[in-house]
Image 1 (tube, helix red, strand yellow):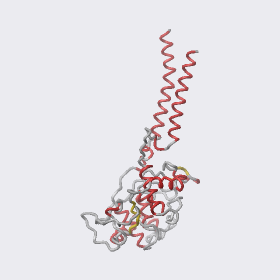
Image 2 (image 1 turned 180 degrees about the vertical axis):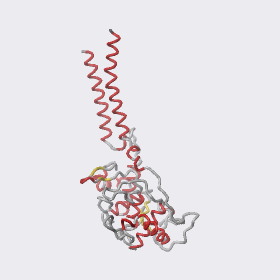
Image 3 (image 1 turned 90 degrees about the vertical axis):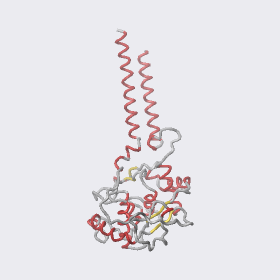
Length: 314
C-alpha cells in the first residue's frame, strides 16, 4: 500500500516537472538566433560571368578612392588591383565601379532582370524603373538575395544571393552607367574608429521603432514587416540608409551624415550582431522578452511544484 502511494506521489511530481522541462526546451530553441536565421543561410550561386577582377570594396586599405579608379587599369585575372585608402577618409566614402564591369553587367541584366525591369531598366507593369537609383541601390537588393524576386505580389525577403560578388557589382555598374552620377553609390565602410555609443543612440532614434532595439525586425501595417538586421553587412546597412528599400524611409546626408551612417553600421554589425552577453546566456538577444519567458517558466514551474507539495501534505 505504501509503495503504491509513493509511486502515485512520484507520478504527480514527474508530470509537472516534465511539462516545465518541455516548455523550457521549446522556448530556448525558439529564442535561438540560429533557428531564426536558418532560412537565409547559404552561399552564392555562380552563373558564369566573364573572367575579371575588382577592387575589394569591403576593405578600405585595399580600395580605391573615386579619383584613383575613375580610369582603372585593365583587370587582372590573377587578383584584385590594390589601392590605397585616402588619408582624410572619415570611415565611409563612395567609389564608382570600373567601366570594365559595364559590358558583362549588361549581359547579366539582360539574361536575369530585363523580363521584369525592361531591357533598359525603365521598368514595366511588373517591376519599377531602376534608372537613377544608383549602383548602391542595385547592390543592396541583389547582394541580399531580394532580387531577382520570385513572386512580385509579396514583400521581398532576404535569401541566398543568386549572383556572386563580382556579378552583383557588374549588374550594378551597368545600371549606374544608364544615369551616370545619379542615385546611391557603392559605400566603403571602415568601422575601426566608429563611435558605438553614438551609433547606438542614432539606431534607437531612427531605426529601433521598426527593426526593434535588438535588430530582430517586427511586423508593420498592411502585412508588411521590417526585416531582421542580424545578417546585414556594414555596406548593406549604409546602402539601405541611403536608398530606403521597401517601406523604409530614405535618409540623405542632410538627415544622417556619412559619419553617423558609419556609426550606425558599426553598432549593428558589432553590438547587435555580435553581443558580448556578459550576464550569461543571450537568449536570442531579444532582451526582456526572453528574460520574461525564463522568469515565467521558472516562477510558474516552482509554484506548480509547491502547490502539489502542499496538496500532498494536506
